[in-house]
Length: 229
Image (tube, rainbow, N blue to C red):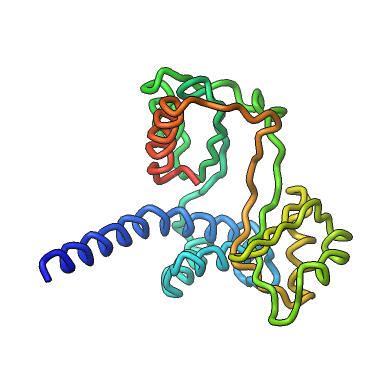
């Protein structure tokens, strides 16, 4: 009984830790999307997707509604999106996307993470050619529909790659086709479980086990920052 209790307690603490780290980031994305394109998800694809991502992380509806309301509040802080680039442990190249109401605080924090691991920030735009930006969709197909049935229309909407596994179906269009791809999937009645923009290395590099451990510790530190998305 004692061990079972400790296990449940540890699992609960881990879950709360995850929520305390992820929910503020999701809230920021919802607020930014609502401020940018309006508070109606039906008329704002970016907000609609931010809400879907929040629900995928079991974010309560009250939290989602509060994040939308913050976008129209008179005393709402001006939230901006900003990107930093740098070299981390073992020379790994890192792009850090942030959403913040205080860029002075954010850049100081991000710079400190790089400096402490022996790395440094580089001028923004220096690493752009090293990565390809893709929109990444995690899909749930309607019952009875297979992957081949959905390929044609999404290709017209910008689809570049489609991959199916036992767990889910993934779709990768160019990042500029995010909105058109989302609309095409919705027309087909396909449920988008999660969607975001990601960067993929154009020339992947292999690291030693020791380097990977140092890189992972560095990334955990960066991702724990409340301004880092």
